[in-house]
Length: 197
Image 1: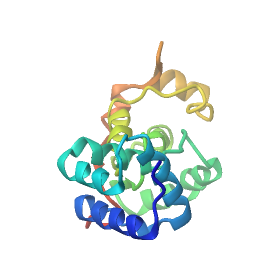
Image 2: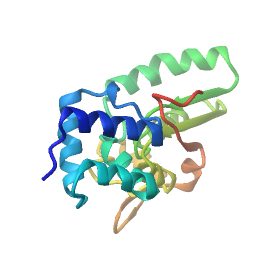
Image 3: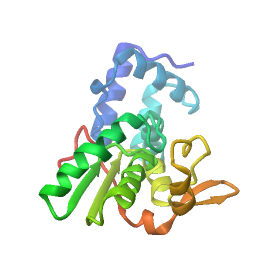
Image 4: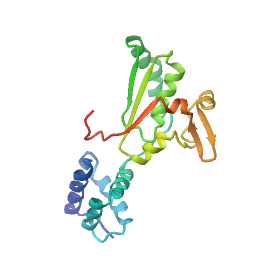
């Protein structure tokens, strides 16, 4: 059982930064160390150094670690009061000042919030042309977003029934965003802590 000491944690942080440019100093040390201990002990490595060696030689291991570290908690219209302010104040003001909107969902997870923004524009945007860029560091979450789902009943619980009927298809695996809406969002891999925009 591996329990990261200070030297091993520093070594892993530096290795991860070298390989991915993800700076773990942006996270709470105790919390991230606990998560790393749990994850690394499932990887069947004898030491942190053998694990880091494996990271250097197996890109899938790096991707899996990044996916684990990304905290993907979201749903459609999460924190609905913020979407109310967007719909009723911010977006109408922006639409008065420009003929076309460029919007960015910076840490989009599996796409729920980016698609929520698209739903607002489609239903309340007064035919204003728009483009939504949605970015995240988690490749598997981005793949789900690009595919338009599937999303659980819990994910879509705040979507108004008429919107749900118009913009989603119910399949055995869950709810899927209609292609017409899916094509309105451009999903890309992006590291907010390092990549330049």
